[in-house]
Length: 274
Length: 210
Image (cartoon, rainbow over all chains, first blue to last red; front, top):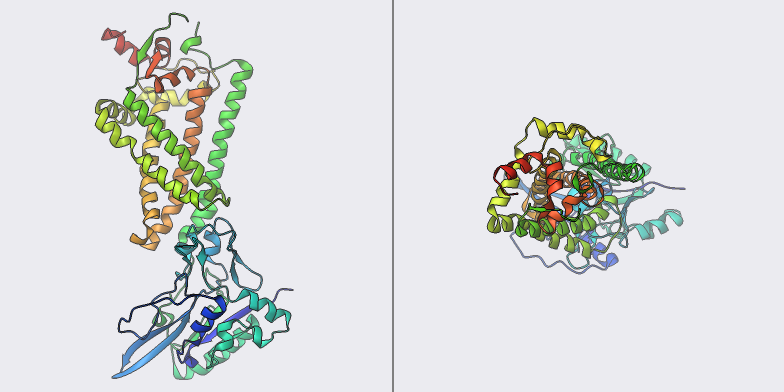
């Protein structure tokens, strides 16, 4: 029986300790991405083939005071994912649990996931030629479900979070908490909203959800996330039509070859016209 | 047909350019089609695809350098369409099964060859442009890169459909098969020229070249 799970980042509680990034590196056995200091508190500008999650930090001056906005950025595990639609070898799959998983053996490193992701998450590793991204610790999550939602098998980032800002559980439970927290935040923040909780857009929400005090764009997220429009043209129209066209050419030529062989036709003119 | 005479059709440079283009194209299809069809192939094929993308570019400058006249004759002809070209295309399905009658006399290139040329030229330009965007995707906005893929696929499908017809006509089709030697030795049988390219044949007669 499939249980839909979800992760919820309650950004108001986040202290940007980056323990989640470190826990991710440990569980995934990923080396450090050495980044230069460029006057910013944010350690990694973007995800990479060696960094699957990071904390975005944004400073805003409000009434002569610095306001910090944090966001745990990673794969959103979209309900309908551009990477899954774009992948030609089905290496990327939307699992029943809601996780967008990645089968390294099927991956050929073509990078179609990179360009079709709504959020620019996957990165093809230059050396291994394989795509990389967060898989929500799919191995741990299997055990989490098997063992009756045992905390110790939560994704490593959620398990390690010291501020209880990263919550993990069934999607149903996370949606409930998200909406409760939204009601609380609304009193203080008029723009407060949930993200990826509602499924009324073309990506149909996601298993990585947020409760945000401000608009999504404040955190560098698209206010209205949507699938790349080229995807449906490509996959639903061009590719089927292309297959039909090439097939039709084969059939026409094969048909003509058969007719010409049987009837001895097509021999007017040329060297056979006598 | 012991005394069949031959007439000059293509220079050796055009022949070399044709086969460089043909081999490159076939290799591009063989290395690219698996991704279109969703077949898992070694990553190496993506590199091979790019090698042949480069060799695919060579015939055009080669023709311009070595046989400018032949190149111009072909490209000009591809874009000059008259009534007889459309008349040719109208009866072409019958011609394909050897049942066409009263085909109007054709130029050096007939209506079908002109259509083949137009689709090949437009297809090549499309494939090179979108392929360039895909190869150097870091240098283009992601929206542009996203659209390059469906356009590259559409161009491939059209060009493959065209080449299937082109190959059959050159090596399989009984009536037009004699033209194949035009792309190997650069000459075609006089009888073929007369039957398939009447206007060109008449021109050669007028100039006393045959």
